Image (cartoon, rainbow, N blue to C red; front, top):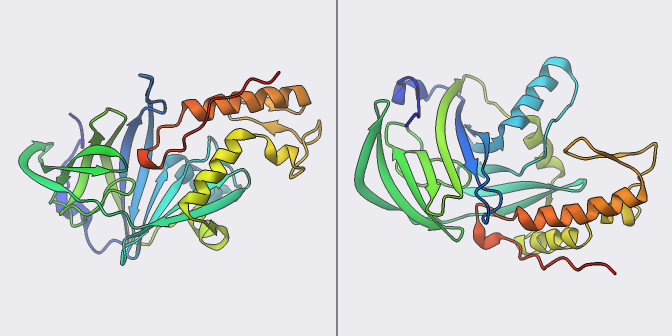
Length: 280
């Protein structure tokens, strides 16, 4: 099992640094009924007052913008998280259509710490288990780090979470490496989100997702934006859409995609989408 190719432990996590960045390898199943898995990387930035958890594509986009001055983004926008380290309040930022929403909560995770331990790459780890978000989780944490953090909303163990996975094989997080910065790191999407994000409760958010599922092209049908030869809709797969018949096809495809890939980390927050009704 590969976690690190080198030994750093506490010495690498000098408390003089303003940002401690931990990069996780994430393997997950977007469809719980399929064996298909996807792989990506997430950054966990631990700053003096806040932590930021975000997919690596945001970091790449932000780096390009800082170097060239051009704002660019490649890939589908995923949700991002920040955490207030003083009160452990998390803020999830989610982009829906052309609006950014903020959802706040303070998840309480009751960990059961086991005596079981193991060592990998000279890193000492201890096992812990918990039920969170409708799933059972197994974590391996290390007291060699002066933090009680981990990927996503997982925190509260007496050490840093190195490995984390659920017992159903849907999600696996593995710490790959860490970096330290003498100045505080904050990517632009968090700066922008704090200023323009709209705060809503989870109940309203789920209702909004259900509404989008029922009419995926509502933002076009409602006149919010116009699609034509001069203003085209570019999809994640590179397709360009501007014809009415192509829009209808896209709407049906989007419904199928939403219903199929409905396997969030917090399973108890999943939206229960109804079967797609065939149009006469």
